[in-house]
Image 1 (cartoon, rainbow, N blue to C red):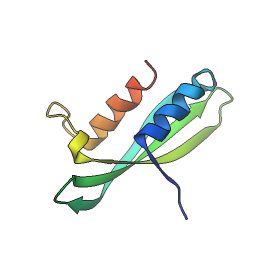
Image 2: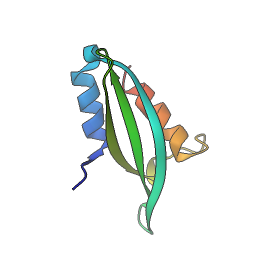
Image 3: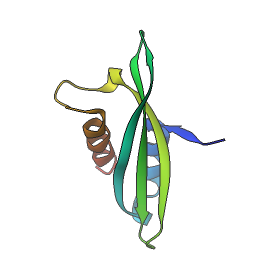
Amino acid sequence: MVNVYTQDNIYKLIQNNKDKIRDAKVTSVKTIDFNSMVGHTYIGIVKLILNSGRSKLYRVVFNSTYLDYEDATPQDYLESWLESCFN
């Protein structure tokens, strides 16, 4: 079984390990479902690059209710959200 994390889980992981993480990137975003209550559900792959040179991949689930009108794509949204996790 593959672990899928919420945005809150990834945010807490980053906050607790900021000193160990050199960089973070969104590698892909895919649509996995549509629900009339929440809209589209997406899975994004987030890559955390550690200071040691190793990297870890995490699957992050989010839906279209979080997308702002200014964000052109779900990938843009996830990238801006990921950047805000380090501030």
